[in-house]
Length: 128
Image 1 (cartoon, rainbow, N blue to C red):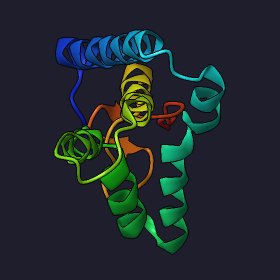
Image 2 (cartoon, rainbow, N blue to C red):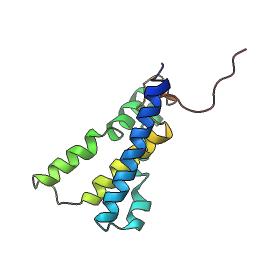
Image 3 (spheres, rainbow, N blue to C red):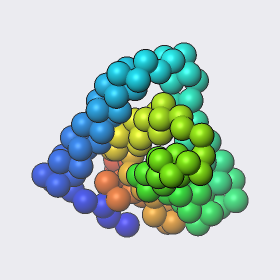
């Protein structure tokens, strides 16, 4: 599998960095607990446990938690009073997604953990 490359990949990573910075700024403006942020920031990565059931299940579990649709739906549910408002959780989740994108970790293909929409992650394989 190949992901996006070149200039578009760079723009997607800068977009992720922008999301991270905006999320942290808004979290600060809400006077969110920095301890809570530190504790929960990498919580979405627990979805990687899905890989224990194989790459197809792992990619589905990872992608379900690592798309911006999740925090948007959570925010919508809070806005409509379906859930208690805790905007800090939305911002922590969104910030994590921005961080991942900025670092080059994209949504996963079912072929392997290293195959993402932002390209293959990890060290380059040596050709013979």
